[in-house]
Length: 224
Image (cartoon, rainbow, N blue to C red; front, side, top):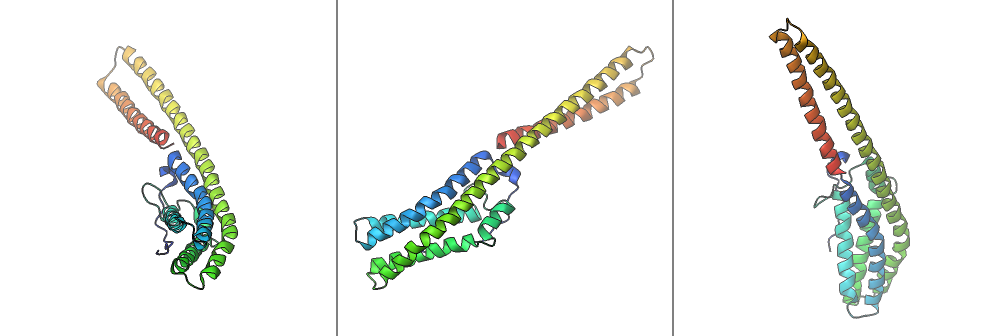
């Protein structure tokens, strides 16, 4: 099995990350903890020659590796490391991404040694088992960062929606004032076409702005 390379693609805007995507990321990151433990357990069972354990171990390792790639690089609608906090969590001082790929390498070596009946299979298995607990702490930290980012983005999106609502109210108030001025102009006996043209122009501008704001509000609401 090839080891995942941790290449970081250009991240999308946080505004493009919906609550559904964030939930998927949190679930995937949390599942990595369970998968790492299953890899170690099934590797031990494979070493003891339990039927089917090797197949399960390899399938679990493949899922773990694929999930890591999806989290770091993004695919199938997942954005990769879209925020500074996530990039720090994986590629910062803790070197978590490297520790994950090191774990994948240890698991691959152990399973290959067990499958071949290598004299070093026991040593490789012990190295794998010894890496699980430290890795679990890092995976837990990464999952916590995803949860924190989800809460932060939810707050930002809510504030953005509130700001749009306030802007809509302001535009509606402006439109009401212009409409009132139009009624005053219309009541004059010496009203001119130029005065109506000015008011019509302002109303057209307000209408376009309102349409743009409403469209932005709909997009933000749909993304949330």
